[in-house]
Image (cartoon, rainbow, N blue to C red; front, side, top):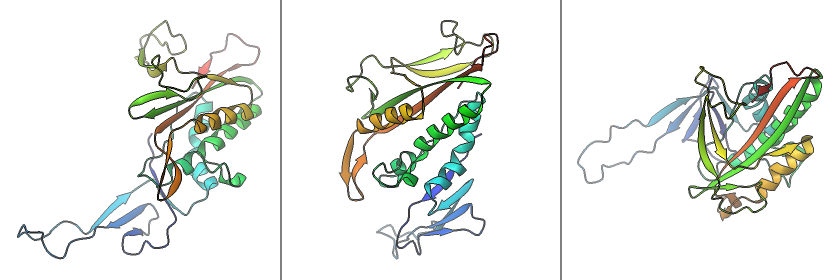
Amino acid sequence: SVKVYLRTRPTDNVQGSFTLQPDGKSVAVQVKKTDKPRGTGHINNTADTIKFRFDDVLPDASQETIFTTCAADVCDNVLTGYNGTVFAYGQTGAGKTYTMSGDVSAAYNQRGIVPRAIHHLFHESELRGDKEIEVRVSHLEIYNDVMYDLLADDVTQADNLQIVDRIDDPRFPETFAAGTGSRETVIKGLTKKYCANEAEALAYFFAGEANRATAAHILNKSSSRSHCIFTIYLESRGVGDSSEKTTVA
């Protein structure tokens, strides 16, 4: 299922423009109306308030609260073999990078969703002593409609990166499920790094972040200028039992 959460960035004054509703899951946005029609001769009958409902609204929430509410369940489902995605959407300066990556120059509790997800997955994997879990990661940037492999030895425009749809193709046994209509979209040629532990996975994530395109604006002197997809691949199998089904997510 798809869930949508609203995280509001702290601000000094939201009076008259944004109101959290009593149910805690809805907001009302005030639309400023002009006093006089602009040369049209028509009365402005547009709504002055628009309401939006979400799975939850998280005003002034901590990074820990954001991860627990929005991403912890996704991580747990990945460990059982389900694919999952968490992404942030919003205008420039809304806090997307802070939410997903955190502030690496600040305190430990300022970690974002991705570092917390990495910790969660490795910690839970260690508790499952009956499973062997192999972890790989990739880091893809999309900038001006061009893909860049942030974990490649040479992070330049990669001509070898191609978007490929795999549909019940026996050439790819990890996704082949004959007759089920199984489908997966992958980036052919994208670097996948094996991670023996949490520290290695974090190192690859932050290395990729350092290679992203950034530029300054009024709210952030190092704002990310691109879309970025950090993917964690888990392959799980029973310890010492090669006949047990391998789970991939």
